[in-house]
Length: 119
Image (spheres, helix red, strand yellow):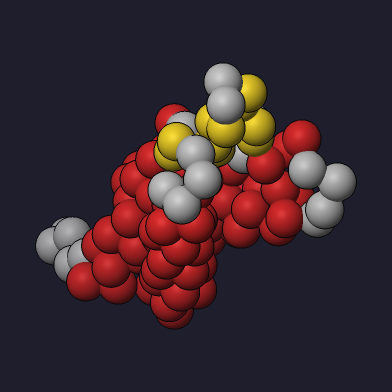
């Protein structure tokens, strides 16, 4: 696992897992993204799996994609948290999505700035 970026892999997995966790709670009823009848849950899962693949491959030029997806996930998590606070409580799923987005972003930056080992 010398070229694998574990921070990016973890961030992608957290983003993909977050859709199955409760994103919000309104009047005691929990809802997750996977319960919606839209494609947003599949979008988040696909983004998380793309980050995992990019981090697993370890190519420096692909890490730009990981940075962009991580930034998008973090910003969407913050946007959804702001929306939820108007009429309910933020669930653990949105916090995990935020953590996954930030970890994907950090993993992408780490993949770009990592130095080659001296042989």
